Image 1 (tube, rainbow, N blue to C red):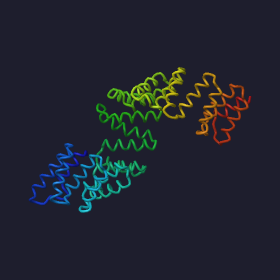
Image 2: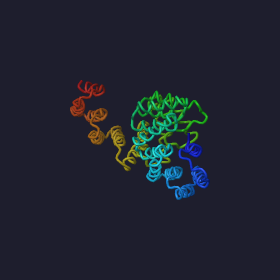
Image 3: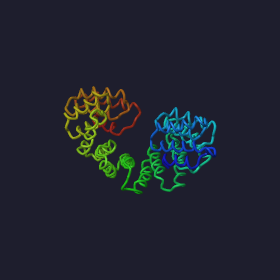
Image 4: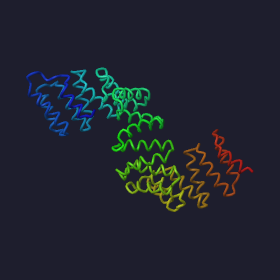
Length: 377
């Protein structure tokens, strides 16, 4: 149910009817809500304030002014109007609904839940409210209550897209990517011709997380057919090709992001990684340096260190890698890279000492153990 339908219901089924015989107030109320639906907020506010001059506690006007403020993004003022209405009419569903949405908009999910739970005491099958409750439980990381509430929605309306999308996000948030995929696929297959780009990117991202990269590509491609520079689709394409070890294709999509966002340090570093693996080392070094000129980035420093190593500048590589090691002392790869550089400089004892430092951290790593055995003999 959308906001316009909610407003229509408010006019058709008022909880606090305007007194009989007061046609003027009824006309002002209808005028105010029509303006509100059309987005003419100044005229809507004027009509509702005229009602309050004649009836200071009129629930239509108080809720209407709350809705006007909420549409303007003024949550504090909206809350004041809804709360004034609830002081006089504690069971007004529309004031409860509006107040809860204000709490949600200001990330006060626990307060929003209290209000929506109060609402559901009067109407426990209201799909609009149930989905909001499920969303709020998801935001506060209550997996059980969130899933239970989404499933209530599906019990009332089988195939409800909002609930299916919410269930997908819920399972995705908790890293249950296979289950998330199932829910989003139900939304997608229900109307493939008009699939929402957010559903398509979500499906693609599930495949990225599951490392079924080839299956993720068509979803991102469908988004790009409609929105050629959609960031999430371009990122998804690039990352899938990276996962498939097709660095040339991956670089193509990183560069398309950089066309629109040339100072994105994360993407500069990802493009640098692709260039490095394509052995275009000078270009990769330029990308990493550009990223570092924007802000420190551990992956850009690592990329530069690996280029130093590739070019035989082993001490420079060791210096860079040792700097990163201070911030990430449990990263086995850093010890391996440093030890390899030391070994290439004929400093075998130092290399073994580096690997020994890692082992003393009490972390088991097959590659570290294997390298130590090779160096000893």
